[in-house]
Length: 290
Ligand SMILES: Nc1nc2c(ncn2[C@@H]2O[C@H](COP(=O)(O)OP(=O)(O)O)[C@@H](O)[C@H]2O)c(=O)[nH]1
Ligand SMILES: [Mg+2]
Ligand SMILES: [Zn+2]
Image (cartoon, rainbow, N blue to C red; front, side, top):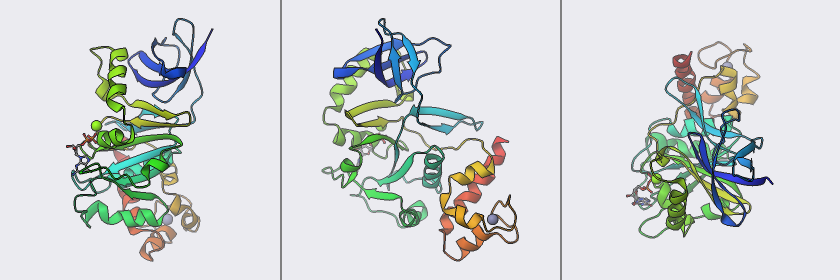
């Protein structure tokens, strides 16, 4: 008799699935199946062998050093991009995340954690207003001295939300504030996972209810995109599309081409100049992946 489960962790050729009643079971998977990701729904046989990975709605991942896409989690509804005044994000980290999430059909939102610290009004923080103007949620939170999560808890009460961001911005602290029995859960998980596995390199899914889950991802220093055609990259800048149709050249790169309506819109303030600048940086970076 086969059973369905939610993959909460996966590494090498092994995974852990949560079945009903919070039961965690380890499973192995044969090479002929696609590798399950945290967040996948799976069918397991009576011996907890993997039978099938149910078709995923999407994947969240990043580019590696050679520009290849590396999936980290499946079936993600929203990407919670966590930043903080300390450690401060690099210039275009937030734009990369926003664009990456959109390209993967995932709704992005930005959390500025450590709201107890002064927020610099320069660098990447100056662009947050632009993002809010485009309709992306930007929420301030803090975990210290006492947690203040604002509307975050409500926002995460449906669907699967993945927390991502640089090491040290407070992702684990936010998880602790959101999941009161987090320590107990990670303890049980590491017992089922067993020793000698590198769990710090894989994402972990924490079901919150029948309709909500949180995904914790390992800390990173940068978020890289992967190699893709300029037309595909532009899908990650939906605010360009109405203008791009007016560009003189159909394959306009919105750089220095004559008759570029996107550049004109950025200069006129109709689209944020910070988004146009981010586009040019990300487009230029694509050459590395060629
Ligand atoms: N001042 C301040 N420090 C925080 C806050 N949230 C987390 N921290 C601290 O930031 C450091 C990194 O937090 P952690 O949750 O491990 O970050 P992670 O690497 O993103 O998981 C720890 O020393 C936390 O105590 C906050 O809201 N304010
Ligand atoms: Mg952490
Ligand atoms: Zn153009």
